Length: 181
Image (tube, rainbow, N blue to C red; front, side, top):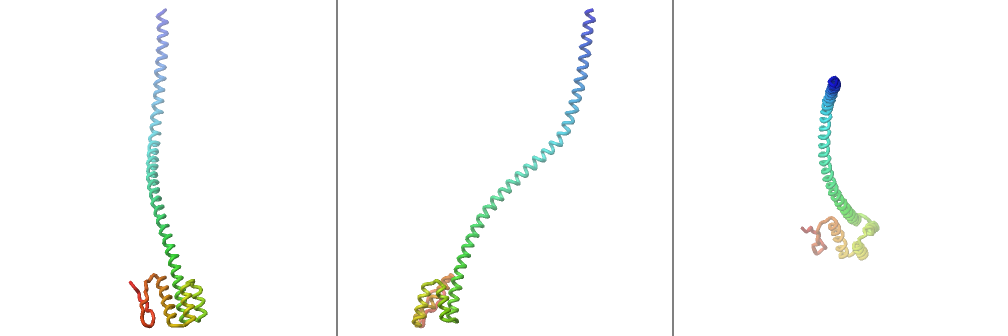
């Protein structure tokens, strides 16, 4: 009887062992199928991830280049702004010189073809005190000496405003203006 019990218990354990073995086999097969499916799903995702990482790296390189280009462009903008400021200052200076030259030329023209009142108005509007003194002396005395002082001063002031270097060259009848250099 003990033998029957031992055989029964042994048979029971054998059935359980076989059932467990079959169950573990089915479970291993199921896991293997899931693993195969997961690997199949992983490959496109890995490929996609590699592509995304490549694109990300490419964009980082482009962003770095763009930042470098932007820094260079900003530096060039600063240089160009300085050049523009310098050019604007030169333009203002040239405009002021041109206005001065135009005023003196208008005085010359008016003194040749205009009335004394028109000359007075132009000279008073010039803001040049020395010119006003020469004109007042010329108008008062109408002498050759005052005329010799008035005309060369106007011509020299035009030359000076133009950037020319003119010096008077004395002659017996007055001053002759010749360019120097």
